Image (cartoon, rainbow, N blue to C red; front, side, top):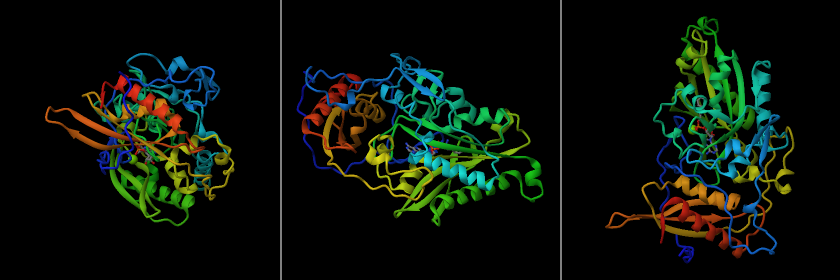
Length: 439
Ligand code: FA5
Ligand code: MG
């Protein structure tokens, strides 16, 4: 029997998902959870909707069979395949053609252009800019070329979207560093959409945008300074990024945190004090010499950074939820205009959330990223947050998890019927795809 009562809204027990630092791409990722995974979450076709009824169920919209990127057409079959080595759902495929960072009236595009301005002004147009490199890259480009170790967690099917065992959707713009360095570029910025299997909350979305910056120095640049190349590059890097933060935010409090990335040494994160919290906005460092050696720059030293555009844009424009960036609601899109950095987003309305809890016995292969993928596959952007609220192991060694799903549209009120349908579908999919036993 697939049908079980949908758990009622429970009181929170205050248990939150693990906040332990995770390393992905060598970097601490945002706090929440991330776990191993394997199967694919595809779209849901619900049997609950009788024919003839007008279909108001947004999550069942048809999937385009082609998207376009910089004049190149990408077919759905090139990306989404019904094979165990492919974990890309249609919801991700449809994002590939969106290119928010190339829209001059969109907060992500406005921010990209403001960063371009900073570099053009301070470096006399020396930085070459790339913003339409394909997000489909090889495992070699995404990981090997930037020295990510073979057993690194970010390579797992749980964390990264694989088209096949050799091909992924890039999980960072660093995937383009080595190739551009090999081609002889010495100063460049790469902006693009990046893809990560992840948790669900207001700051996490499986697609977001990064800008990579790289600058190469020749010995002549640092020799007269009396410093070694690494020290010289690290100082220049910090100066450059502090200047960028001031360009974007005005006078702000910021601090540098030492960290680790496989591709830089030393490595740093920049945090900005905003609304009484320190916010990590970028990772950076002095490029590992091995990357320079392999790309024909053996005598040189370089720095590199990767910044999260949504993170910065949420602060700059006061955007409270990362899903809003994907909204085509005019009440969102009409609030931004090209070249205007300072404007603050005015929420058009806060629609009520609806909470649904579900409990199940997990199996060994269960991961929270897989769960989130299934939920997103059903509810799309109607899901706001997924939180582990209870977790125990019984005497027989069986482990039970209880998750609270928050449903809320950014654009309208959801009906009880609609939410119940969603939750019904989620339960069905979770049970059939994740090898768990609903309680
Ligand atoms: C990286 O991706 C490194 N490639 C950055 C880098 C480049 C370091 C070059 C050194 C040299 P990280 O995973 O921390 O690092 O991501 C970089 C930034 O992307 C973060 O600081 C954050 O602003 C943003 N970011 C990371 N994960 C998410 C997410 N799930 N949602 C939104 N933004 C994110
Ligand atoms: Mg980081």
